[in-house]
Length: 432
Length: 190
Image (tube, rainbow over all chains, first blue to last red; front, side, top):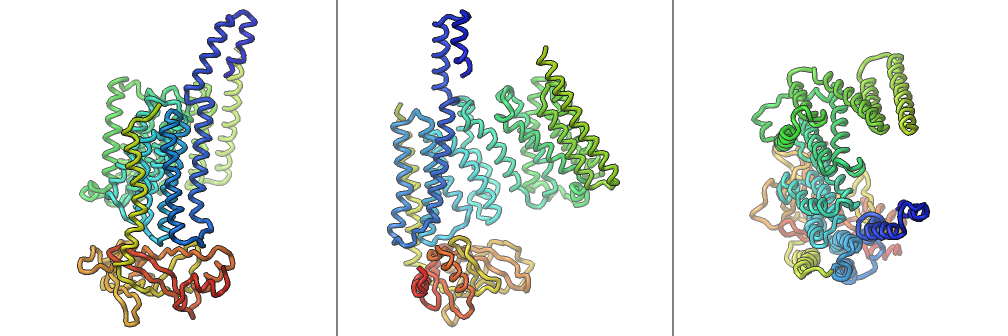
C-alpha cells in the first residue's frame, strides 16, 4: 500500500499527527486482511493453481505404469484417490471454514479426483462409454460442491464441463436431458454467481466468472445450429447485444475492461459478426435458399432467436423507459438495426453495402470516442477495425495492387498521425 | 466458525454418491460378466494399420457391416441398435440393425452407423467397445510389437465381449488363442 510508505513523511512534515498515522495504518492492514484482494488474493490464486496442478497430477496417474498391480489393488487405489480429497474437504469445512483458499483448493481437488476415479475404474474394468455420459456424471457428482463448499472454482469447472458435455452430445447424440434442455444445466451455478456479485464482487474468481459465463454461452450457442446455420448471425448479434446491456449496466459501469467480460465479448463479438457478414458470400445462402415459415418456426435457430430477441427487447424497453430514446448509445440498438438489415437480406443485396458501412462507422466512432476520452486503446481498436475491414475488402474487391497498396499506406499513416496526436494531447494535458 | 450440520449432511450425501457411482459401475460389470451372453469378435486386420494412441487402440471387427435394403433410410453417423448372433464358427455376427430399441433380444448395443463409401448398400458400424485399453505396451519396443501383431494377417486376433441390453464387458484381447498379456510374456517383452 503506497500510502503507508508516505505516512512517515506526512508525520514528519506535520501534515498529520502520529496518532492519525497509526489509525490510517491500522485501517489499511485490517482492510487487507478482510478483503479478497492483496495477500489473500495471491493466496487464493496460488492455492487454486496448486489445487489445479494436484488435480492434473491425479489425472496423469491414469496413464502411469501400474499394470503390474492386481485388479483389486488398482481398484483400492482408485477409491483412495477419491476418499483422501473427500477427507481434505471435510477438514477444510470443519477446521478452515473461514479460509476461502482452503475451501476453494480442496473443492477443486475433489472436482478432479471424481474425474480421475471414474476414469480409473473405467480403465481397470474395461468399461467403455460415451464422452457425454462420462462428463454428465462427473458434473452432476461435483456441482453440489459449488453450494456446499461455496466454491467458485468448481462453478467455473462445472460451466466449462457442461459446455464440453453440450459439444459431446452434438457428437455422440446421447443427450440425457434432450438436446436443448442442456441449456438448463448452465443455470445451476447462477444463484451462486448472484450471491458472489452481492457479497464478493472484488474476488478474482467473481471477475473470472464475468468472462466465463458470457464465454460459455457464446460458444454453446453454436450447438443450436441444425439446418439453418445461415440464420445464426442475428442470433449471435442479439446475444452480444444482451451482453453489452449487462456490461454497461450499473454493476459494471465503474469496472475496468479486464473485469467486464460482458462488455468486451458483447462489443468485439458484434464487430466480428459484422466483419463476417461484410463478405458477399455470407449473404448468398440467406438470399438464395427458401426459408418456409412452417419449417422455420420450429427450427432451433429460430426458437433461440425468438427467446433472445424477447429478452433483448425487454431490456431495451426498460432502458428507453428509464433514459428516453435520446439517452441510448448506438451499441444498445445495434442488434436491432442488424436484425432489420438481415431481414432486408432476404430480398435485396443492399445489406452487404450497409454492413460494410456499419463496420466503417463502428471504427470511426471508436476512434472518435478514444480521442474524446484520451484513451489510446479505444482509438487504436477503432483503427484496427478499419484495417481489418480494409484487409477483408482487399480479398473480394477487384482492385489493382497499386490501389490496394495506397489504401494500406493511407491507414498506416492514419495510425501514426492519430497516435502521435493523442500522445501530444496527453502530454499537453499533463503539463497543465 | 463451524459450518452447520445441514452442510455436513449434504456433503456426506454427495460424498456417498461420488463413491456409489464407480461402485455401481463395478457391480454392473460383475453382473454382465455373470449374466451377459459372451460373443467372440474377430478383429479385422486393417491394411492401413491400426495403431496405439497412448494405451488405447481402435479395433475394427469383422462383424462391423450390415447389408441394408434401402440406403436412403439411413444417415451417416446415425444412432442404431445392433443385435448380435453367432456364425457357424461361433464368432459374433450382426443379426440385425434397427432404429428402435429391440424388444425380443437382450444381445444388443447402441452403435453408430456410417454409409460405406465403396458399397453404399452396406452400413459400416462403429461399436462403443472399439476403443480398447491395452495395458501391456509401456515401452517403445512393446508398442512396436503390438502394432505389428495387430496388423499381422497370419495371426488370429479376437476379443471376448459379454453383452446384455447395451451393457457390455470387454475381456482380454486374444492372439492365436492366448491372452495378449501372456503373448507379451512369451515374447519376453515385459
